[in-house]
Image (cartoon, rainbow, N blue to C red; front, top):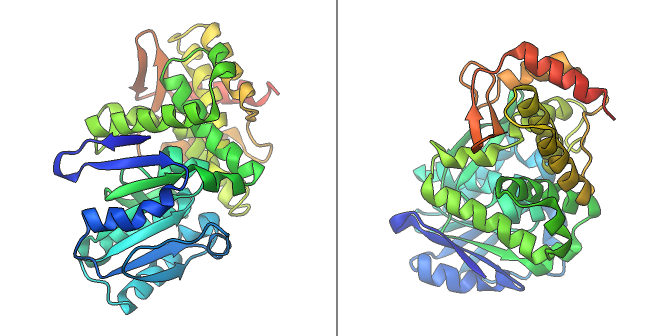
Length: 349
């Protein structure tokens, strides 16, 4: 199945299919016919997979970067830029990101800033990458002050989501992707009871279709695309605090699941929704086996402080929240209210 991100002359397709990675040659021939070289950015563990048999039809170079969040550092960015420069890639050539969300974020950011922008193709190999990170043109790396604080919007020529590579995912990687799928299910207003009759492929298609539609209508997050940040204000704060303990302490989708549960409780505390919405959120998260609790090692005061530095905040605490007319961005939420809801939430489970 194909989904189109409609951005005029910069429109592109997101292909979701078994063996989609084998469409790389055709995609480059169609969208980058003058390319003579491609730099394929991936990690050592992915490059050793039996499915790693990409063929671009032009000279190709494999550039290895660290695994997971370790790829999204200034040091990794600088090293990758140096490797790309050593290859003497031109503006006609292409960078291809092959990996999970961290790798596609890094590859996209380097493509955005090398020579002030070269073409990009994303081949996401994790569930999280396929339903979220690799499409939409957001790229970035982390700072000690927070997640994704340095980045750029840089749309790819295309996104190839190969369903067959998901078979090699670890249970935890799969669960992390389900956190973003749960978000899309809730944003789409689906009933939790319908989950039992929805196939895994259907869940993936729902998520990709929703994001493609929102990006098409709001590329730079000035309006409706911001709804995709549902659950992310808390999630990014938790990820920032977790990174102090190690790069794999908390996965993005795990943090999003906690953020979704909290967002429902905050909306209820602000009298935007009734208790049935909180119960519905919990039912969706429980269906996917997602943990909806704050990590034991975090302090609620620290969390509030970290949320205030979220890149989407405007000198206040802002959240995407459910309300009587659907989801919306609510700015200027009082820190004392947020702290009270966090304290109650932490004591729930």
